[in-house]
Image (cartoon, rainbow, N blue to C red):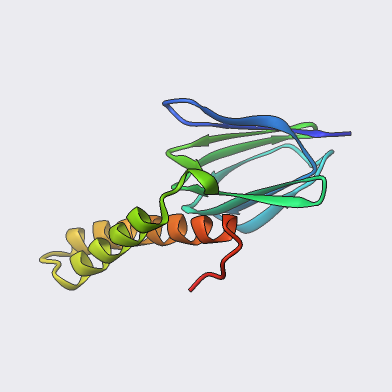
Length: 138
């Protein structure tokens, strides 16, 4: 029994296909979903999202959202979602460096919180870009 995965953002349907396994950064921790999983709804945190099909794992960078799980379907409503091959590694590294600089130069607790979120997003994008290219994460 295949598991139908749909990843959707406000701008587009990012992915829609049958998969064997889903691994997601949920609020409760990393969770794995197989066909016939019990129904659930969870908050997704920024992080690496993976699906496996025919023994191959495919990474996505997501910046948070929601995931609905049904026995035969997983629907992800993501703030943003990018496949590893869509991410420009050089631009992701530049964004990571800018966010790290903002953390050092923050003026208030709110600015620090925003800079930390930017740094998390940029780091995840960089990790996923490197995973897709088969390079180790640093």
